[in-house]
Length: 181
Image (spheres, helix red, strand yellow):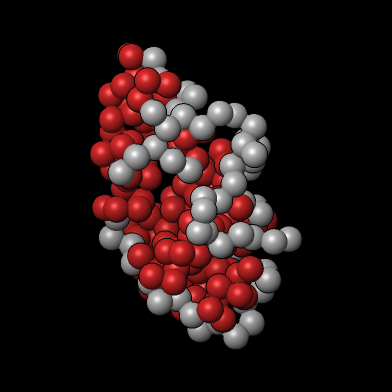
């Protein structure tokens, strides 16, 4: 059970922040997941909504690449909610079960090279806090500067969501895959 009460209704938010609630609802169809925790501090939720709206819905980065990065972040931080949400999204993007399993088991063996590149880069940023010159050159060649920045910010955004979900012990919604560790 979450450590904070989930804010999912407009009347749970002070009137001065109803515009934030409305913006989150408009972009996501409701207030749920990490946003139900972030709404305890509506100005933060407003910034998350803007960044997340771009990362998730407006960016140029391929959705499959985004979901690989997001799943890897979720797994590396053992985030139940983000993992559950992202595995569902991955399946919609036709990410093979073998890739989902490899990320769940924290390895890259057997992944297509393009997928392994994203998973390994994400893990490097999380654990080493940087990437090698070779990795950056390969990613720059593959994505160009614009999408390379999108990728790194996507990793940061999902890290931020895990840092919201984990300490509040936000659990996956019904029907989401449950991460076991």
